[in-house]
Image 1 (tube, one colour):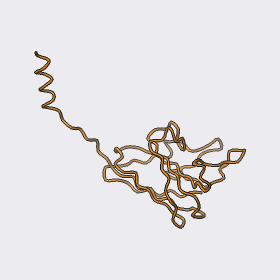
Image 2: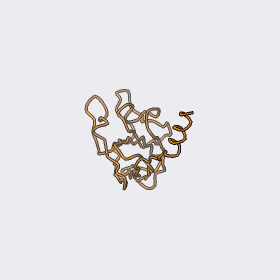
Image 3: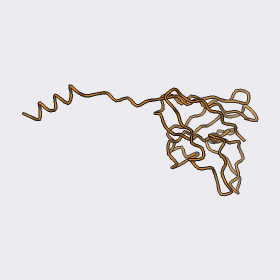
Image 4: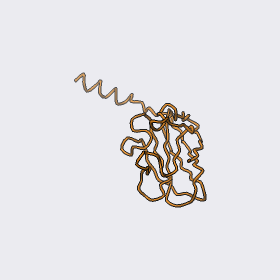
Length: 142
């Protein structure tokens, strides 16, 4: 009987907790042409960064208009994120590279982060912080 009373009190006192959220607007420039599409990967952790579809928080493809593309990641919990971008000209949905691993398609990373000789930049180098009032960033593909 006491369980029912306590359970009822907890239900009556339940409080809805809403996490602060903000939008992340990503403007991408530098496309050499309008062929194909712009693919963006959004990460909230280092695992899989910058282009693992299965480990990305969100993965989207957007049209290219002229030499630019734009996408808004809506209602993200306030926090740190990093973004990888490619110009997927041929529809393979991944960054094409030559036999040495050198990219054949244009790509970009948030914060214009650059990798070393051994590969892409780290999540920490590319991290941006999304506040509750939102954030707009520019990524230039190279």
